[in-house]
Length: 114
Image 1 (tube, rainbow, N blue to C red):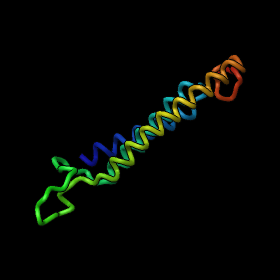
Image 2 (image 1 turned 90 degrees about the vertical axis):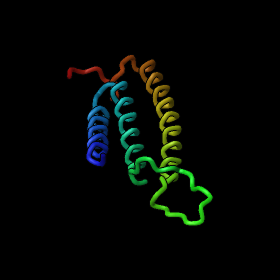
Image 3 (image 1 turned 90 degrees about the horizontal axis):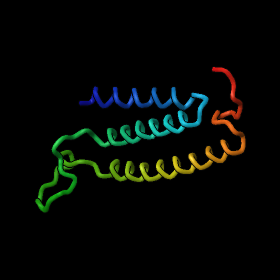
């Protein structure tokens, strides 16, 4: 399970960075989205990968913290999802305004040969 998650985080990070360095604005937006997904998976993985673990502690007298899921990374990821959605929306508005002013969708404003 850990290997699959590590590979997924690595592939998302590499794809996001590759798209981030592309000259078109839509590719930059997709790259930032993939990077945010990779960071969210990394934060979830930092809270231990535990299957079939309840997130809520019951009323039993003896509590073993290793038997429960850590709720802090889940809360951080939920906050990060909201922030990345707002950042993506703002970036789309800024890039659409830039396209309207310059007439091209290249990040540097110049429509050159690839």
